[in-house]
Image (cartoon, rainbow, N blue to C red; front, side, top):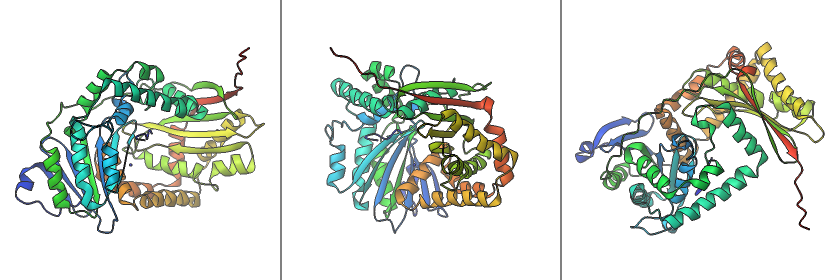
Length: 450
């Protein structure tokens, strides 16, 4: 988040020059979303919610870690840090102060697929967001001294969040082993060796290439005057020159032909295992059943993994399953567990596989399926309780190709049957397709200074 997260409209009508300013306008009143595309390629979405107590401005750039290159990892996240250093117009390091003085909050986040910046403000202060974001889209200050200082900050962040966190180290190793060709194999924060050598010119070139109106979209949401907000966006962003067109990525991962296994030796209290399987994203219909499978295995204390490994066998301190389905490209389904003191990590690993094996032998019960589906649906709907997360969810689906995909998600989950869950368990959660990471705790070395 800002500042360091590594890590989710109402145009009532357009009149006169409003139409002429847009190459394309779509109005989806049934969803309460209004979409406009400026002539420079910038997409703008507006969500009108008269009951929202505040307004949200988000700008999303197609500039995640997958857009980096070998030897230059971490640029996306480092640039996120630098975006708060100021512009000639507003001065250095004043962005957040301006927002805070207006009673708002701001932050940012970087992921594998994108980076985004946001502000929460009173609706009548949104003009500040529009002016500040339009300015720093192309006029960022990137002084060499500031760059080196912020690079040190990110390197320290990496030490704290990854190098000194045993389980995060295992996660990194599993990803880099699971993917041979796809840039999902490197961490969002970047490899330390790359951070040490990345230059200000590297980052400047990345900024100039990626931060352009035709590589971004804006979402404004809340109890807003949509017509005037969109007019303000056209005024501030409309004159920014369209950037160089960036071809869509076409990355194919070679077929995995057997289990991959990595070990991490690190100071830690307890051993840990993570087992990851390549699985499709939400653009594939199997994703809905995989989502439900994760819920059956790990949807709370009554789910199979918790009940078996923690309550009954008492071999794990923590254990569960997870599935990431909103990535641009197929990613991973996880099983994981931490052994209780005195218990073997091999037993935890085998117990995780045994729970999946039971589903392969017999489909889950209707009650388990219904419970998992209800939980997924509840989480999805409740997450949209705030105007901020309504905007986030719209943006995440837009990054996948079209925000309207979100309207098919619940429908897809509701159609999943016990047999569907059994089928995807057999298809994807298989030994030859898994990558296993094992944390082997070692004692901290005590240096003799005498």
